[in-house]
Image (cartoon, rainbow, N blue to C red; front, top):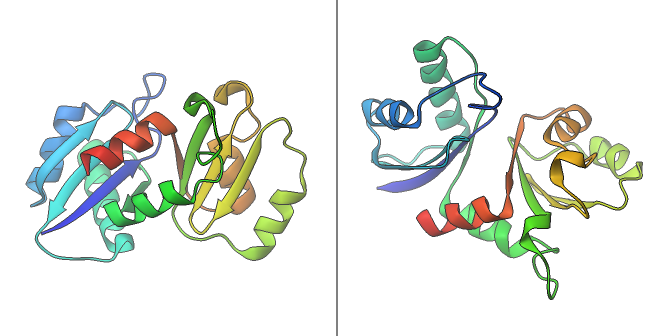
Length: 179
C-alpha cells in the first residue's frame, strides 16, 4: 500500500465549488482508495492506493472523477508523505528561531517552474513579505496577514504559469501528522 496526500484547489471557498467532505471521502473510496482521511473543508485528503502511481496520473484521475461527479473542475496536487516531509525540512523560514508559524504558508505547485518564470517573479519587490521557490514548492513568510499579501496563490499561478494551491503552516504540519 502506498500513501498519498491530495490537496485540492479552491473548493468550499465563499460558497463556490462546494463539495461536502464526507462526499469527497466517499468518492475516494469508490475509486478504490483505502484509509481515506480528510482534514478541514479546504480539500485535504490522505489516502492509500494498492498500486504505486506517478503523482501526475493520480492528479488526472482525481480531477476527472471530481468533474464527472460535481460538474466543475478542481485542480488536484498530489504529494507523498516523503515529499511533504522533505518540503517541511526545506522551509528556510521555519528554521528561524522564534518564528510565528501563523506567518508561514506553503504553496504546492503542480510541477517545477521554468527558470525564466522564476527569474521574472524574483525581480519584483514583495516586501515586507518573503518567498523562496524550491522545486515544486513556494515557501512564504507574510509579515502581516496572508490575505493582505501580494504573495497569493493567484499571484504564483499567474507568474509561474502553473496550477498551485496554498496551505497555512498549521495545516501543512497537520497533514504531515496525519500521513
